[in-house]
Length: 253
Length: 293
Image 1: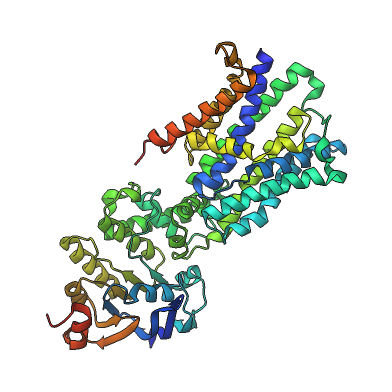
Image 2: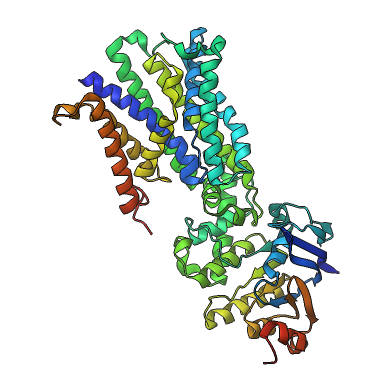
């Protein structure tokens, strides 16, 4: 049973079809890699799935629900979350606060509860804080816990974004170029974390230009070109496909 | 002289209250409200009109805060659909619409003639004492709002306001609907402006539409930006400094030879403008906003 189903999704910018009738499925605990040239429509596909730029045509279902027209925050509450290609950390909040801002805490976040915190709310907040600390330790970010996130390096910001979405206990994470601007050691580290999370039952779609890392990480791969899916299947087969080499690397490598 | 200082202090504290309201909206949440004066005016007129009907002043003050806050609801809802610059234009236009409405609807507001003879706060205690009492009460309220703001900033609610200010789309991707928080903080800031308006009305005791021009909004902005938006200290000291300078420099004409009364007024504004430029150049986070990054 697939967790995420994308059926013939199209997203237009004016007359330009950034995503043109793309269909894909994601199984439970699967890691799906997406590669493609710049402007192939990968990030727009993410935006259509996560709701920042809703699909103009087609249908998207997540965990059996039609989410095609749902606002982003409701998709996130269902457990479908994303990170961004250019990190979008809350720069004036500390790393720990970045994670806390993502935590589901509807009671504690009421205006009146800013002034009158009951013991129950304080305990809940403390639990969330402990959870955030656990995630920071998992991502090796404990050292920068109280640093404003705006001052971090690009790679660390990527990890903060990952940590933020983990606060939601997601079922599916869309990672947009998690390795861009990240040093090789950290890439291995991120891959290791992604595999560990997959082991805990989280499915991933990963957009990445770093093909070696993506090939090693993905169970299955898709290559996009000009808004369409060019090839799909086992990572080795897909990357050896001559059409892919033609489109992606301008000929046989 | 002491009476005059007290009067300057009261006006400065009223501006502090306005700046603290704007600090919630802009300093934390980055909502560009160029219509501060509208909520100030509605507060002043609400309290003024009700007091003329014989309502006790405390009730008038509460009504002023509530009505200004409610008036912010439609603007807050609008802010959900408008980016910074457009919200700025809409709120500025709104504040002018409010002023002109007050001017035109004379059956309710007495139009350009304004509302003379409003009851003064603590008038029963005699002229000298009443000002001191107003100052003391205002100082307590401003102090309370400062404490509340700090408390709010450190709360989960305040955390989300700052997150909205930093990146609203990223927050909604994390399962939070920014709409409710933006509307609430807009209303809260407006309610503070309304209470400030009530204090103004019952201190000056004579309000007219001409007192509620956009310049008031920009004084509040100048104070907040120079002091350092986003910090309570910045909002407080920025507006105190600005008001003390604007009022205090009235005396400067005695020491600057060859400048007329009118020329001096322009000179003061020029000095404020220069200070604003220097602060944005050398202390972009404001005088009390911490070092720039």
